[in-house]
Length: 285
View 1 (tube, rainbow, N blue to C red):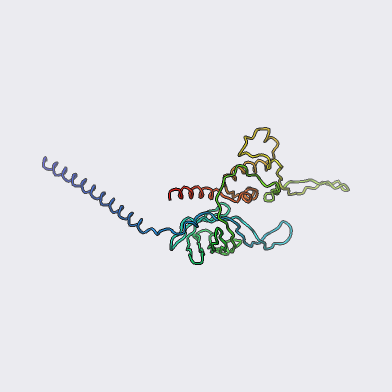
View 2: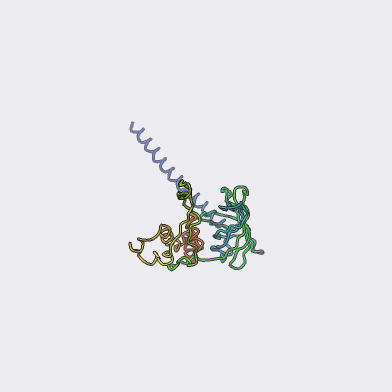
């Protein structure tokens, strides 16, 4: 019995030693694979082209007016392209339109300064960018992979390299149109015919209008009191509140805020984050 216990103890000890050796061997293999992988990383080139390029993204779409027939017209949106990494064989980055971020990968021709950048293709809005670099600008075209899935399958780009700068003094331009054209409200009105005395009901559409308070109240620089807010309209409150986020670079997806604020600031939250990361990365270089 004693000999059996000794034999079992020996087997357990040998097993533990084997496990330790196996773990060490596995760790060495992982280390060697990591070194091998790192040694195969392609060197980066043209880091001076890294950054955020912003501007107009224009295409022709069918527009349906409230009155009249449908017609084809130019529709302008804001787009940002972020160049993250360039190697001899590849380019990596992201695109942002209306807060929708999509990664892309492509190639760069050093002789012609021409980028061909492909989005993944697993979203109906994905496509190919073909743009030429000229100093700090990118110009060219975008073509959708699935042309039948989007309103404008072909668009043009005119972009300028920019950096996000926080500006607490940002206010809406006093020449801005303060009418909310995107969200009309329906009201039931009554009409009484003077001759017959008969009363009929009909539906009328009205648009909200902001007051001049949106040009005067800055919630980023002053603490607003009950007196400041008491007589404000609902649209005033929305614009004043969202202006705080716009000053910090937030990009709005809702049409109302996009109309009043995105087009005024021309910058998105992702761009602000990217710029901060890019600055930190440059300091480490």
